[in-house]
Amino acid sequence: GENVEQHPSTLSVQEGDSAVIKCTYSDSASNYFPWYKQELGKRPQLIIDIRSNVGEKKDQRIAVTLNKTAKHFSLHITETQPEDSAVYFCAARRRGSSNTGKLIFGQGTTLQVKP
Amino acid sequence: DAGVTQSPTHLIKTRGQQVTLRCSPKSGHDTVSWYQQALGQGPQFIFQYYEEEERQRGNFPDRFSGHQFPNYSSELNVNALLLGDSALYLCASSPGQGGWKTQYFGPGTRLLVL
Image 1 (cartoon, one colour):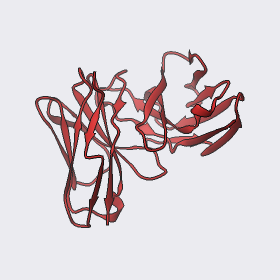
Image 2 (cartoon, one colour):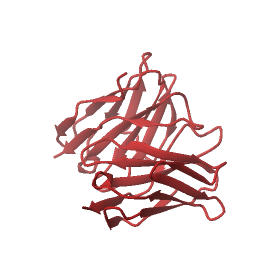
Image 3 (tube, chains in turn yellow, green):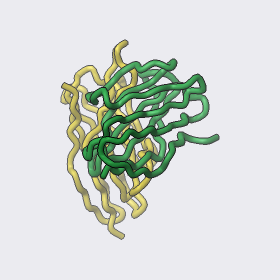
């Protein structure tokens, strides 16, 4: 079945340190992997995504890596700031004509950046 | 350019009642997906609408139904509410189905069933 496992569930870092969140997916047909940030009481917002035809993507302090063989992908945040504190969700979506965009989400990681 | 909007923001219902939630997609988007997010969990896919038809459905009972209008807005209906239906209901829109299309989320409707 379709499943995305996300670890850790909580992560606490000092301001300026790096944070890494890892996800593993079960469906080998998955080909699109977005990451969403959700602040308390707010909507999930896309922060970065990666397609299965690339292994890494960067956007300023944020990067995502994908290992298709091992079926896992990771979010890397460098030089963390207090405003990075939020819940982060990974997700996966499978390719195919039957797919209409169903995202399978991980359980979320609560990131706390201490000043 | 307005993003995805949802109404109402909060709702309190009792068991057995019915509820209708509404979503207006981002300008230029024609596809609407609905997700249920229980407290402390990731969003769970309910279904997706495109060209006024339900295109894909997650593991939710028939009590959950929806509709899409010609202007691409959408409604989520839940009948015979259960306590376990208490959650944040998120609507997401995208410009077309599947593929690489990014989904943008609305602020959600928080439903409490007593």
